Length: 605
Ligand code: HGA
Image (cartoon, rainbow, N blue to C red):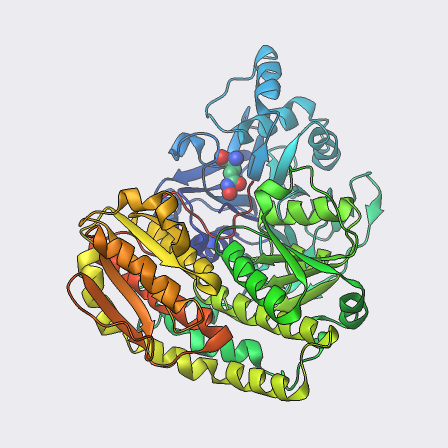
């Protein structure tokens, strides 16, 4: 998703801006740009190619300056073209970059057009640049505070004026923005990662904050214009993890990192205790009578898996809602419910909004399962469980998913313990099984050559069905999502019992049907569903366990996972589905780490 970097310094800042953009590149973007204050004028370079190309352009044009802003854009309004790329200028006086969506852009555009402003782009962002210019009093900080009051929607902006050479102003509402403090120089960014290597002294701006960045001063006002002090934190953003190493793609690397990611996530957990989720967890878990999980995409599927666990093991009612639906739905709030948000980045716009919606309705008990310790989600929830997946670069989530599942299983056990449904013996057995997960996953990863052979056949298909039952239905959904995201094959997942209620009509010899078939209590039912597919000529690709008693035959291909893993089996069974999607995409020649139209850290609605 979009990224922002800004700087005021007494040295040439182009290397800092370009390096910052490079660090944000993995999130996916379609264009990029930089604007600088150069000898009393605004100069910019924009590109629809990679940041490396932008860098060459900057070098060719000898662009350098002490004050400037930069951006990677993931288009929401207007095509990914260079005239829509940020920074946007207004009357060669104001330069501005923006993350988010301005909902009243049409109305503002009409108003600004009647004032004589000429629009060069189709973006919602350009209206902010013109609005700031129109309201400009000669004091940019003052102007931005007034102008942002007219904006409806979500934004993080960085802006500077030709007439104030040593000043950058930032503002945020609904999209993340941080300040980096330097020595006689200061910075802005949408993520601390962008400033790694430049400064580790970070201020996380809060909702509605406007910041004035000058060489020797960082001045912040809150949404009411009141000066506020925000804590400066020392943040060691990981950078090394973004190296690709011997792998062809980040997604492949991250699939293979899962044993390590899970063992890191479990590190230090000697017993099941609510404290794993925070000091206040015991009191909160005692009080709650249900769980409400809010999430999007892959995180939503980890939530769905957790529903099976939480209800079956802890005996606690659990509902799972798609965040973008929940935030606008008239639901019945339950103040005794534990609201659990799941997000890799902790900045997912819809999930954050759903959390705030739940809180506004009086649901105060909140927990996040998140991979970013300094994210808005962690700051805004009462309790947190930080997965230690490390930086996930591939747009298609893999290790974040399995570590989320690990955290959610721990949550299930902690709730079960509080509800008197987990004795010492069961606790020890579950912990032992969890600790064995890394080596069990390594054994599954060793199946890669067999999966590559299947991927060759899948690469020639345009449709696929995924089936699972019970705990493995969400895993089938996740497998279908992975295949869609990176290979662009149309894939759908169903709980296998639903086949006869519709999707069976799609089954022909052309339709590969992937079946997640561990030897659990649903296996016999699932086998009947598989027969229904075979009877219509559908070709089955079955991920079974060593003891599932499903054999290969005509139209039935079987790969066996080394062992049946009971309740934790979803964490193992998703791994071959990730590999299948990866190798199918590879065979189709798609851009695995940056699939078309998708981005990482979905910070827009
Ligand atoms: N709406 C703006 C910025 C989009 C964005 O924040 N994407 O992550 C645009 O379309 O340019």
